[in-house]
Length: 290
Image (cartoon, rainbow, N blue to C red; front, side, top):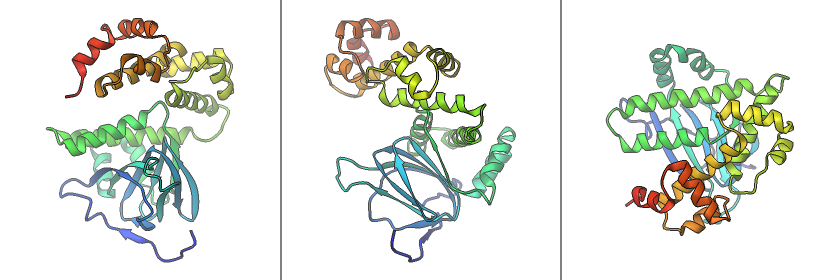
């Protein structure tokens, strides 16, 4: 960025409600918002698209699956790579005050170590990657609770925030490239790759090569981290996606099968029946969103 003008400062008064020092939103980034800093902390998850995150004088690639931890006072702004409306940069934001973090540390004694990490006034911004759609699921749940406001939503929001911060803290602690940390990082990358490319003709050998592990090592680590073999976890990802498409779209079953990685419709139908207990058509009839 060439402009050296002072960044705007967001106080949070327009975000936080009385008694709820937490704010969740889903937004499409543009070129309109100025560089700014906050009087609160922000966790941003890149849900869709790609762009650049300008923060603390650095220009950092922002891609789907990136999670940025932005402590209070850090000047930043996101910019999409293109103005094409068909290729938006979509983010989820979880913002909270230092007071809310203090409340979580008091309410959850086991969270104190994690809370102290995020409360450190010397904490700098950092980035982690979503592994196995863990963060994607958490942000969607946070969003549903915040805007749905079912009974007990405030308690669930607190619990989900503890879970989110703990997951990020765990990844951060594993980040140093030590001898012991490498396998955990490799398996996280392998799971993330499977989650993103489940519809492709993935093979264990190719994934092992990308992870710089032997097939046996990768298979063992996958079972340890997911409870499933490579084939079982790939089928799980594909069936989960198929269920989502059957419930939320009117696409033909054959098209759903193809879109999740199965060109053989008969095989897809047999596998779906074995995994869910019903045929794709019955599943759609029972779960279609009206």
